[in-house]
Image (cartoon, rainbow, N blue to C red; front, side, top):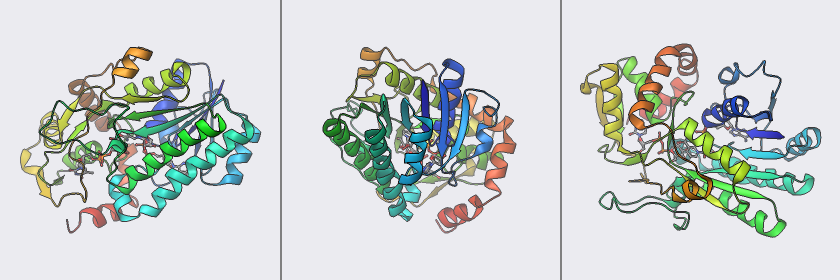
Length: 338
Ligand code: NAD
Ligand code: DAU
């Protein structure tokens, strides 16, 4: 089969490309616009694999996407391509609407025009909004109402609704997964875990938003990839699958764990102005994917976080190139006067 992985030069998409090249015999095409978050260095170990090809282009460019379908005749689309950072969405919502909503609808139009065996939308638990901190008994299930907080999550929820509309109206064989926070190799250093590892390594302050009590439900990226792989091969058309491994941690716990692994002082922690509209707690109930598809996550947080810190220690070249470029301007804008 031929699988097009949109956004495959980003964090989770690239891990998925490697997962498929290792675990399947399928042809994998990475289709990516290469925004600030896309990086061909990340995919250099795939370049010589005969089952792999990279094509540059935007999911929002209709002509380009139609040409991609005409030339490649894919069997499966896995749509990772998105603007993914909540803080950036608060600064510039429109870009998120264009990429995440219009881009998804262009891909669906192409599926309608040329046919597809499966369209899989990589969505997020953020479409459910947040849960209170004092109700550890509550979890997001697939039946939880959509209730978004940020322009990013609103754009992802809108995309989910478009996918469901195309599935019902035009019988596009679509599935959706909603996963919790991922971490692992090739995570762009604007996000919590890589930002904190890199700042600690550089003895820079670690900017914790608000009180640091917000909770995220962390999943090692390879476990997310195995879930998507199962869904595209065995998942039922029209279904939504929540993905998460019951690894809820406060941000402060995550930051302190990183400092401990690196043998650095907690004095590096600096509490800064909170994120606007900051979601309090995410927590996924993964019962459906576990019982219906037999998925189980392999990596526990305590192991995954050590593996991740180790990866950043061994791959300084990868992140040093990123933080020496336009990332500097981003960092100054977001944290300079915070
Ligand atoms: P990322 O920002 O690291 O990567 C996004 C990729 O999409 C980049 O390679 C970028 O170049 C590409 N891209 C952006 N706009 C594009 C366009 N118009 N056309 C083609 N490519 C484009 O993101 P990520 O963290 O890897 O997230 C991937 C997907 O998974 C997103 O859809 C995100 O909503 C979802 N998700 C992420 C997490 C997480 O914790 N990171 C959790 C659940 C779901
Ligand atoms: O839950 C899935 C989502 O997880 C994905 O859909 C998003 O694409 C992904 O970016 C992620 O969103 P978050 O907003 O949860 O991730 P982020 O790494 O930006 O922040 C994690 C938590 O850490 C959040 O509570 C904000 C806090 N934070 C973040 C940064 C960057 C800080 O305290 N300081 C920081 O500098």
